[in-house]
Image 1 (cartoon, rainbow, N blue to C red):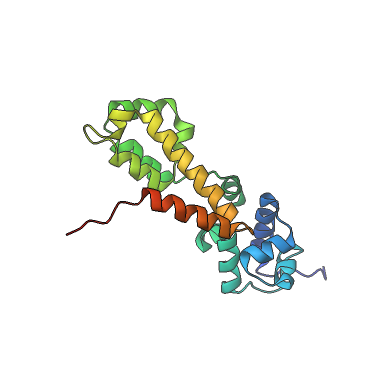
Image 2 (cartoon, rainbow, N blue to C red):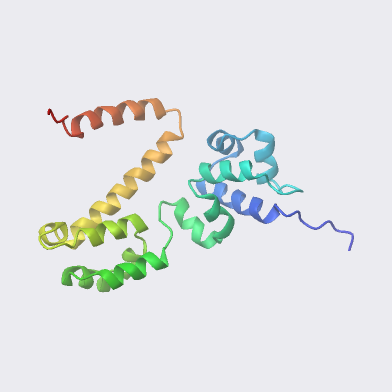
Length: 191
């Protein structure tokens, strides 16, 4: 009965520890990525703090884990862990909007055949798909499957870039991105 009860930050600390473990990071990796001191990270990862985590600490943890503070605080682990493997969280409201606003027969048929893949689309990707269904738009010209594959490939590339940006190869990545950007950016318009 004299056993100490866990502090108010223990549940959140446990969630952070599980997500760090899911990423495959050690204490030093997470301290560097989240820009926290090793003592704080040690407290979080090994038993949790005996007191409430500070908002700045939670914010840095969330940013390091590529989450929002709200997601970190409120979403259960079973919804966050898929994100650690590059899968976006299911946005039920956005998915309902996609089903409700899909007017192109090809898009509706694709949604019926691919419910799981549709549930993995992020909110911005759903909006982009809806915008593509205009008459003569990309969904008609290129096909729904091709457009969805492009969205999925882009998401995967962005996830990989985020991972590289957290390493010692960031400067090399930055130079590469600048070179590619110079090739694809629209030329300036001369007035």
